[in-house]
Length: 154
Image (cartoon, rainbow, N blue to C red):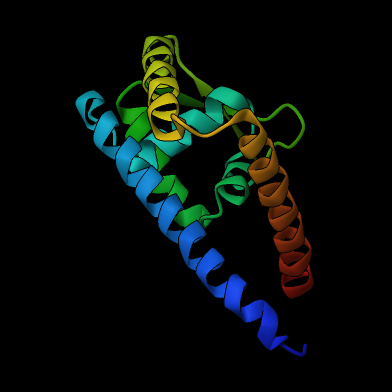
């Protein structure tokens, strides 16, 4: 693919800003969640499970963009803490589905409160129109990355 020198002027700073913003946002949330005794890896798993329960370990690893073996260690810790449980899948006897426990529910509520307050603080002063445009751009980038990733993995 030919690189257009005129586009580089905007693309490189945009890519660096996007990566830096993502890192800083995660770091900010990580600091806010420390009071709940949750690492970034653990709160990421819990948030995803709260949005999409009854997924298999393989599906969750794919969604989180991590290796299954890495996820297993996180799940072992969350299961040991009584926050999740693994159950045999009704669709595939080889697979286990993941479920939040009742003990996890108040923690999820608190995580959602912290997350909502953090979003409000981070996005203060950014107009609704700018947020709509940014969301549209980020969605297009994610879709393009999905296409490019499938070409590499498939």
